[in-house]
Length: 305
Image 1: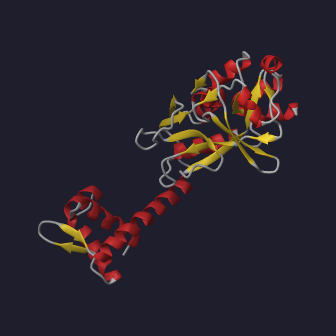
Image 2 (image 1 turned 180 degrees about the vertical axis):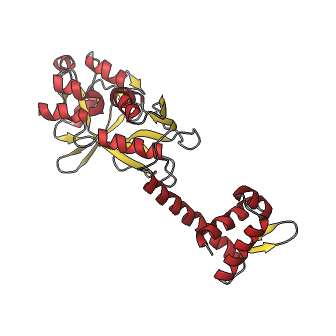
Image 3 (image 1 turned 90 degrees about the vertical axis):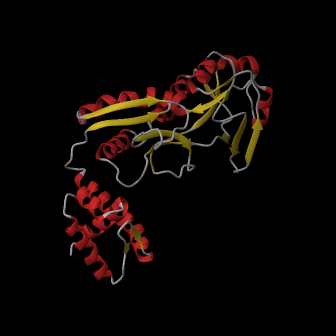
């Protein structure tokens, strides 16, 4: 008896609720389906299904096997995908969601190379800053910016980015240079939806400082906060993937060097670790390769330092 085939047939009978329907789906005869299930029950030494003229129901042993078979068959499918991914060409539509600013600055320049490597893949890219439901909204892959270590989904880390408190030279000349987080209470701070108006810093000794700031502008878009800071409108904190070049050129000046803001991770998130399609796997590997080593947004700031 082919046990793997027997497990597959048993799972199909249970999910379809009928030997005949399972046979139709598997393109075999009802007698063959019945034989496999009977042989499986004989091999295991227990009844798996209660049979009646109207319906099938699982026995206690059948329920236990059904749950285990889900995992067994999923593991087999995942293993086959891993082995075949080197020989199967990725093809079809790949739906990707990413944050607006990061998608424009750091992902858009990569897409032409991916299409060149995998010409049979069609990219469908949505740029949205809100958190999306990967499964409900039908995405194959979601790029997400998250506080380091805070995500429990199936995900692959692509890169990290530092958050930096900063302002323009013009603002600092007019309002002075803050020396401690407490000083921020007397400054105009441009707040951002995903960081709020309570800013947290860690000093060199590891002590946490939480400061409630105030300002006339609150925005859900990092580019808006950056543009206002460049115009001298106030103090912001934003990731280096957005303001790295401004820090390197001196257009923005990093503040409070003895206090650290929480870092963030750039993650490639997907619905499940199991049954990962070849096109999704190839895209994840491609992005990992593109962001390997020092992130491009930190190269300019590192060189300046």
